[in-house]
Length: 185
Image (tube, rainbow, N blue to C red):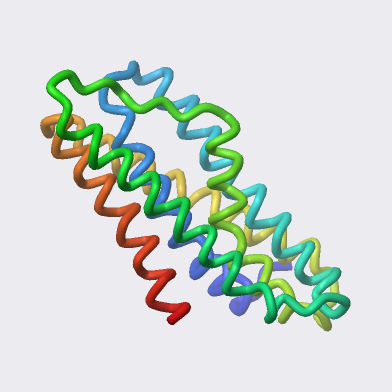
């Protein structure tokens, strides 16, 4: 049961995750195509899963809990995570020997949760809608495909010097964290 409203919400929620996938994809400049594909599928699957899960949790339990008191705390935590990642990448870009930044499952898991907090809050507004699980699945699929497109787009930049790619990824993480901070204050 696809609806225009749910599709537009899914696209809006997926855009932050797509930017994150693009930034993480930039960090895979020294790995084989097979590893890039497996990492891309993992990232897109995690982001799509968490978007769907958070929408569903928000729609099921949103009327029981009030997230308004803690909303800024979650946003502040996500901004802090992005700024720390940006600082790490910025520092790494100035080293003489640049090592590829390898993302393991736990950091990707945490990024998936952090990128889906807005979906949790958005799910609260879906409380009265019937068949919320279908909307959650639709939003998860939209996120998966948009993130996949962004991850594939990042492979175009493989001919750029790795230092530039690290600086670009660092700038993306800084801008995501800064945008959250601007929204809070």
